[in-house]
Length: 240
Image (tube, rainbow, N blue to C red; front, top):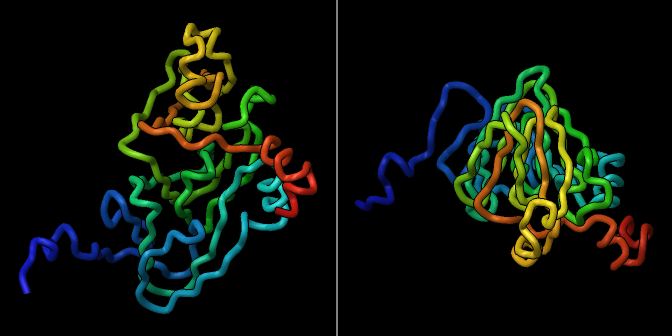
């Protein structure tokens, strides 16, 4: 049988070392020898002896935070030995190596998988207050290991060496040590244009030394307290 489909670029990528790597720009491969964490529903194929265990948002404490904030990562634990292939609606996949002392603040919807050696928590974005219904809370990852994130399209990585302004729905992740804030669009001379385009009248600001990853697409607004109000207040948000 002959076809360009069977060209080398489409064949499974092999490696002598276990861990996560890109199979291609849209798919992650984890050569599993132990355990790893992944977004629920992201598995598209696997080979070998692998078990999948749903974890909600990573424990009771994170589950309650996720219900209160609208942020978080619905997780499953992968255990065993084998090859697991992950994807998320054909989004672009990127692998980031975290070293001790690093801290990455990331939109939970952009997390695809990460090594079980990493720790994460759900934290309020500094300076957000109640300014916006999106971007109030993010997942902050620390420790030593790899994390795979997704973007809608090819992103730009901005080096924050001057005041930087980003649409909240386009901000994927950033250095957790950056100082963040929110400004009304009118203060930046954008008038109502930003609000018409994204449903938000605010833009995020970044200052300090670090980076911001910005995708060429906008996530739907992440509803926090607004969702709870629609579902019947605090208890409605917790029980949904």
